[in-house]
Figure (tube, rainbow, N blue to C red):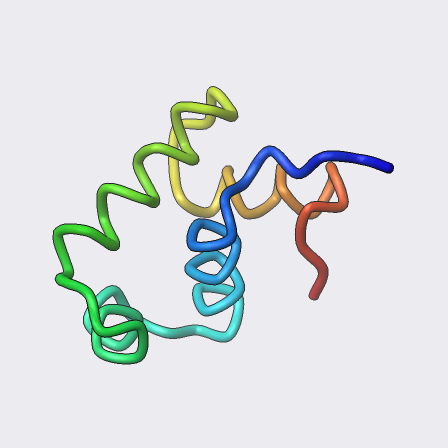
Length: 68
């Protein structure tokens, strides 16, 4: 059994990013603040050592954490 490097919330946020949601859309959909969304995204970028959201998305797809 493999363990995800993402929390459930982080995974949901990145799934919504793949679906082209904005930070504002994600915050509204999940009932959290835009700042909280940005914090989750920053945490994932740091975990992966990426330099951007798009870089993190590519890496998560490569790691099979997310799919298109």
